[in-house]
Figure 1 (spheres, rainbow, N blue to C red):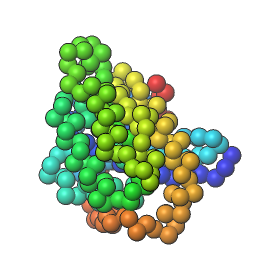
Figure 2: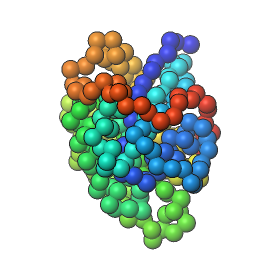
Figure 3: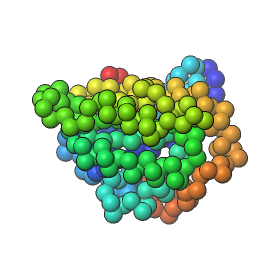
Length: 223
């Protein structure tokens, strides 16, 4: 088996769209309907193997409240992947998601992998009338805002997902696709980590701010 790869993922989106439930479902295989809102950011980790490469994912779950907005970039410094989340039963959360994309483009280099995740699919499965954001709208958004002729990592239907953390639907698939892309970009990621990147204009890794939670390498259930 080849040597390992470490990659940093940051999860962004409006408060209450289910970012924490999404991350915990993947890393720990559990779901807590009464989980509290994230303060600042929390951190979990998970090891996976792709094509004989051991990948340690460092997953940062950031707070979505506006009062934490100014410190969020302290957590997504040097991220290799950004996961933008919205609630498919809330058009407002989808519209708000765009500001997080602007933040990523502003503060990180253009080679970051971006994936868009629509949460709470279980609510729509139970009552289709609750859907406010068609999946086709997400795909159209990705084509319009993520497309870049010089960077094909931004483009593709595989960058858009709908998941249910409650029902464990689609969660593992999101990270499978992302991890495979990270392995494909392994040489570039390691080079950036070794020499730094001119495009990373964020502050210090934690900027003096303490993150809530500790790293974990517990395996989650597959979907």
